[in-house]
Image 1 (cartoon, rainbow, N blue to C red):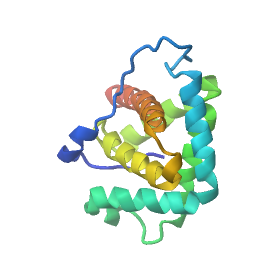
Image 2: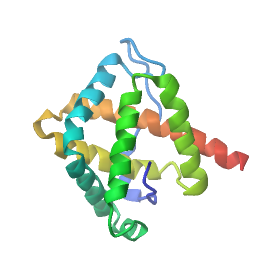
Image 3: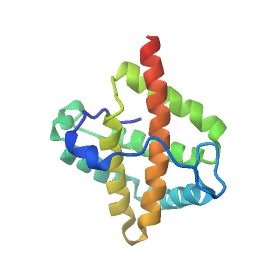
Image 4: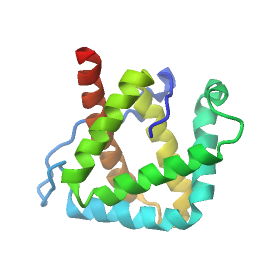
Length: 172
């Protein structure tokens, strides 16, 4: 589940690359190296035990970036927080099984574009909140390599959602 976030001009400096260069190391079909996948999976495994805290960090940052989003959500965010953490876990685990992950991410992108009117720029605010959550949640375990890996993974997954969403909107 990606959160519907309006375009915020000040997130331009946080722009995620929705394309990727081809590393010289072995990569999977999404252009992610084995090392990047491992960094994302092992760091997320450290977040799972603090899922409640991580969800709080995420939504606090999201609403800090755009306070006008808060009224779009129910007063009690408990269910939404669980859905977010579950979605991230499924996506991170799915990096090892792209044949299953890609169609699921494409379907998610289609639903968000058609039903929630999510557009490409909205993904950047969500990505910024996610990176902030990871940095705070992982503390000293967070470093430049983790940031690069998570930024690339999020960029590839969000591009997959954006492309599928754009196609679904055009077809509608």
